[in-house]
Image (cartoon, rainbow, N blue to C red; front, side, top):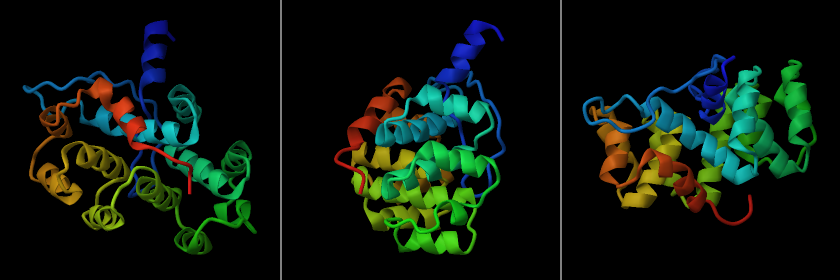
Length: 220
């Protein structure tokens, strides 16, 4: 593989579709800057890199290593479940990922673990998908670490916000003071994420720093 392409792949965040299991794929984002003539062109990159930044910031994992994991066949949702569960239970994320990669269910991998909380434990018990478990983990992190309002996060999910959208809305709401559900409504009405970021004076290259600045304290 040519070195420039490999470098671009490693810098790109790996997107996921939280409403269903993500297809494992490698994405090299060609559009990473906001272009008023093509306002939605960079949206896939903006959503993906924001999600990657949050996972990296909260759990101290490099973004490049997360992308390499996805390139090697690990669904992004699985990464979230493993790192979040490990932080809550004291178990090893790598061991959890290995077990999940072998096809073992999360219910078995996390059997007897304490500290996961009732919603997550309930989802485990009924065999919830990686996507659903990851959404629970992300929402908990947004509330506990990024200062998101729990009611606003629930409202976003009721509005069918994807995990990436929920994270990016939280970053934008913190930046602008606008209610998260209102921002989501604007996107559903046709606004692009790139346009909303431009209005907020937030350049795509500044997203990683904005996400990291929103995270404080210890994982709870």
